Image (cartoon, rainbow, N blue to C red; front, side, top):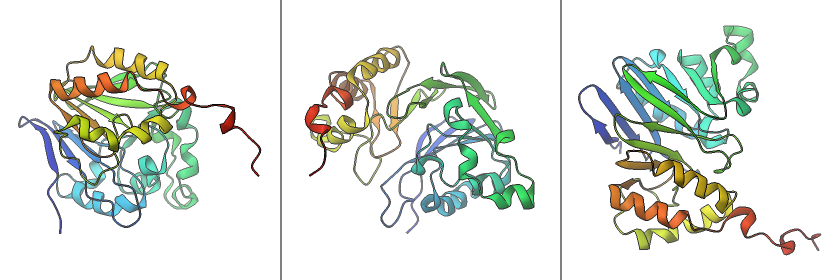
Length: 261
């Protein structure tokens, strides 16, 4: 049964929606976000074939699909942007992503788009410099925040000062089946721990990220998988936990680099 999206913010002009139940079958649970302001719209990490049809239906309930303004791709993974060719074909959206991945996006675009429809991937991409960028959605500023190596080498998160939400991608992700706010942080750690230890590159990078995030005015951290962190206390609990986490290259030893037997 279709479930209504979670309304993260709505002041009558600016709206942020979270879709957390569109993945079916064997795919990992993921969150898709839609932001609208003053006639413009943005999809954040819309995913691949598992989410394209249900997400495009949900988007069509709210705007004219072809008029979608932006797609923000935090990095290059299949659950982020694998259905790129369909979004290019059925919308006019520009794709915002790291300059490191912009040149690889044509690999996700079927050749028939160029041959039959004259669609050029490169002409639709806004390539972000490593330092990030500020752009407007309608009358609302949005900030592409650098989050490199968390986990992708070219990785960005989206900060929305209007709603005070940081859309954090894989940082803060949890392996659960819903996106309701975390209520018991100590209990929630078990759903994040293994993922972060493997997917985040090093504690050094996490500390740099935490230092940046602590300067933001935040009400919500909304990861791409699992539950959100809502309220100052829960956000601080997450930042305090993750900034002390050993992960990635911190925990590797020679035993991890041995000839297989």
